[in-house]
Image (tube, rainbow, N blue to C red; front, side, top):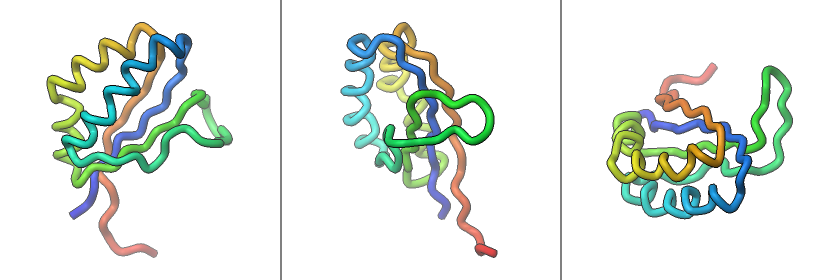
Amino acid sequence: MARGYWIGRVDVHNEEGYKPYAQANGAIFKKWGGRYVVRGGTHTGVEGQARSRNVVIEFPDYETAMACYRSPEYQENIKRRTPHSIAELVIVEGFDGQQP
């Protein structure tokens, strides 16, 4: 079964205000079986407009990734993030087919 992924790109304009959001995410993601694959780190924007932070979170499957996003805990946590950042988030199903 293909895994599910959150791909987030974020610009934070208030580090202190953003911290409660980031701290609460650990317990939320753990509940849904999520784990960080990418969390910040060195990056180079080679096409399009880059954001200052990039995050990839892996979930057991697409449905679980969606359920985590829609959960009351995460929806409440979004309220902590939005005043302090600009974010783009997509949820995608991983590829589980034959490679070239």
